[in-house]
Image 1 (cartoon, rainbow, N blue to C red):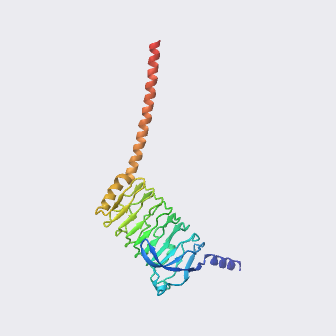
Image 2 (cartoon, rainbow, N blue to C red):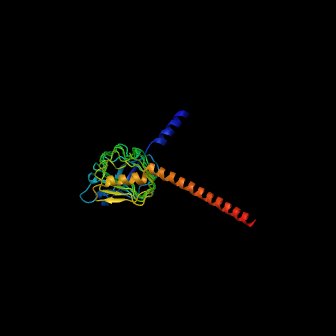
Length: 288
């Protein structure tokens, strides 16, 4: 009897919270284009195991659920990213935007089997972690922005499987290191933005397989300040920059050089002290 009660309690604890959201439908201008959008500023999600599977709201004249292409959450009450189970309601949904919320983690569990997103915009939240293979099944994803958060590290598998990705931004974060394998599946990239981070080391092979880059911003970082656009040789120029200024081996060399210089300076001071001592002794001998 007791085991049955405990089992029922645990089951209820693990069961998802189902949520109905209120949509303000409009032709919303996004960074990736203007789309007919469900804008919801009144979503409160405190349970990480929350599923949105129903909506309310009045459509614009002549439009319905089948015209909705984007969903946009803009609310400080959104503490976790909810799972969207809206395929039967919004069959044309291709964009997911979250902004100005306290969410801290993004992982594959937040998207479930949703694979047809083309645009994801998670700028200006408080995201600290992007789990490995978060977007792995989203083979249609073309535009991904996670700028203006608190991300310190991107795993080499963070963008795994995104074969059609054309735009990526992780600007205005706290990233320090970029590994060579981050973009290994993203050879169709046209724009990458890493400006205003703290980047001090970059794997020199980071962009060598990306031949169609049109814009690359790495300005305001520790080891590089490059901005390149409308240049036919962006990939090679970045590779040269990373290999000379941001490479791991380069950083080790700089660190070793600093240690040698420090040692030489200490030795120089020691020799100066010895010279002064000898000079004083010589002067004393003359006086005697």
